[in-house]
Amino acid sequence: MALSIPGLNADVLSKLKNGDLSAFESLFRAAYPALLAKAREVLDDDSAAARVVERFFPRLFADRTAFTTPDAFASAVEGGLHEAAVRERSRLAGIRKRDDGGKKATTAAPSADEVWGKVLATIQGPTAEAIAQANQMKDRLAHQSAGHIKQMTKTTPWYIRAGALVLLLGTVGGILYVFQKSGEKGRLQRQIAAAVKDVKTGTGQRGNVTLDDGTKAMFGADTRVTIPEKFDETHRGVGLEGVAEFTPSQNATLPFQVLSGNVLLTSAGAETFAVHHYKDDPSVVIRVKAGTVKVEVQDPNPSEQTLTAGQALVVTPDGKTSEPGPNQLAEAFGYVDGTFAIDQKSLKHTLAEIKKWYGTELYLKDTTAGTRVISVTAPLGSTTDAIKAIETASGLVFGWEGQTMVLKEPDPKAAKGKKK
Image (cartoon, rainbow, N blue to C red; front, side, top):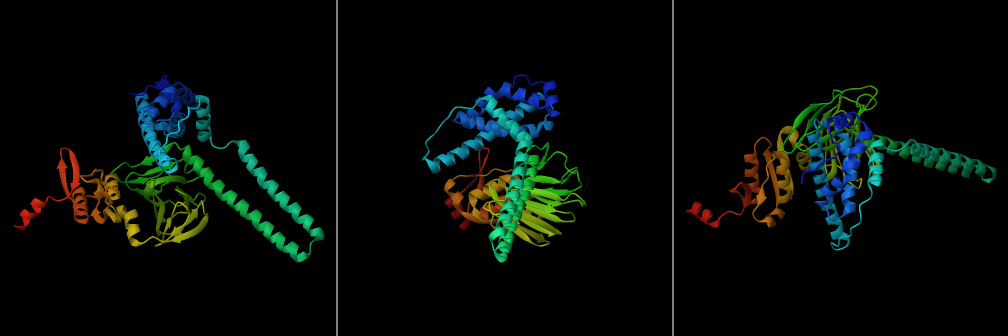
């Protein structure tokens, strides 16, 4: 059933596009029951449906300027909410299977007041009170440390006092450094969460883009770069999900930054570097072609290093780093040279990548063949060559079943006929 949003009209949409939060709240409250029902079509838990709505609406507000008509807005809500619900169902299924053998635990949905409070908090970011409390904590820590040092000087030998002083100053300095770094990442995360502009490619698409600051970017398929408000005014930070090669414009005061996964990259300009990070491939792969780029791993094991031209790095979700091999780099960044590459991956994974990069969906006649491990290299400009490469690597043959493209085992009779 199509989603109907009470009160949505051209005037309300105009207010929303101008950032009117009261108009956005009115739409949310009027539509909340219908939003829950829409998410409930996919999910089996009212609480989970409400969680989907809560996470979806801040992104909807960030994308508000893209909607030209009320129908376009309603369509985006309906489609986006459905996709978010499907992802949540998949996530919950995995949790249930792992934790309780698939048993369902359903709870009631929270009220519109509760959900709107969380949506608003996400859009607006941390309050001034929360920031002030964090600053007070830093000041209190420094004051307590100073008082402790003063007390020790009354009764403790000078060499112990000196050692303790070094230790305490190092501890305070380390805490403040971590606070500063996490604050920098947090600010960029909040800016990205409330972003007003996305530049993206779809399945089977690639493109070259020039950002507002003059930075040039080469996007791979299914890639999204999130550009916060006041980009090129107070900061030059963007979020990346997918793969892109950046050549930042030079700026003496504002470095260019990319936040992708658990990694923050910083470039002063005159660099060319590529970043690869998809949701279904959570490691972050970085390659520097020219210049130097600072790489800060944020969590759970913070580290920092600088990559120069010709260097590359892989950062796993647990914060560990390593140097990628040539095949891994070809998989991550082959699109720059117009090449599709797969190295020792399952056929199932390969077909998912074919869909991403060529926009072509191939099905397996026998799904057990999906576990076959293959390596493939093909030009991105030719779907035919890619299919032939998969046939060769997998031992399967391509064919049509009605309107469906399938890969199946070769016909033994046809093989015998060829031998004769």
